[in-house]
Image (tube, rainbow, N blue to C red; front, side, top):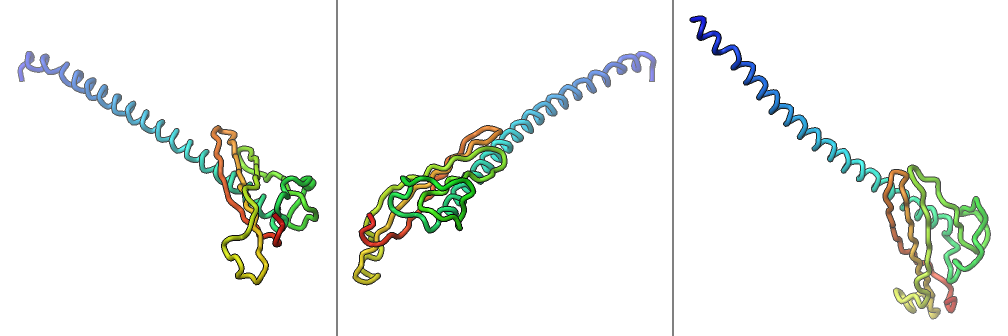
Length: 163
């Protein structure tokens, strides 16, 4: 090769490699932005699932603690003291909040209806059983943000004429 031919090609490799470096850098930056977005979505999904689990845990604990005490107008009675469970005696509702991970939970039970148990009518003999329905609302607030509200319906049988 001649000397003039070598001098013309010395800068071409540098230019091509700088262009390739710039293209690869833009590709890496684009992938980094996508990864950050996916991490945010995954984190939000995790927080939502954690809040949902906490709300469900609180509702299930409330139902278990008050099983056997669900009667017409029992929410208006004086709540039982702290530490109540299925073995606690008394007429009022247990209101102990559960221990949850990553947030706080509040339970709001509401009596929806009390009346004749229409599902079976006279099939239980000549007496007409009553039924009382409750809506148990669990609201979980996460320490990492977000609020999740879960509702569960509960029905309990009551003696005839209790409503």
